[in-house]
Length: 61
Image 1 (spheres, one colour):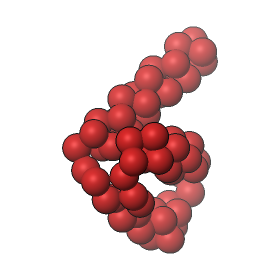
Image 2: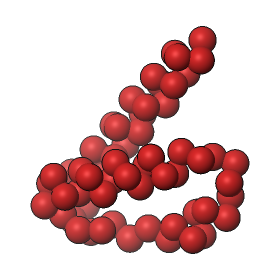
Image 3: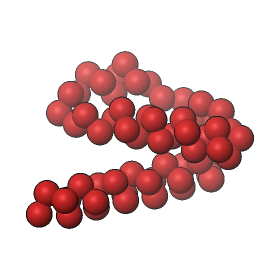
Image 4: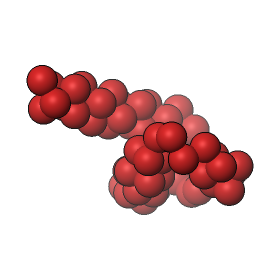
């Protein structure tokens, strides 16, 4: 069951970051404001994927 939840979460993260990189040339993240809520540590992975995919698409963060 844990693997299924993890797979669903990773798939959603990949789809979201891909869509953001396709739709926007520049994305500004308020990471200090987002990190105030430590209940979801998935933000690091979101930011990592966003940086990687933006470089791949030739966009900026």
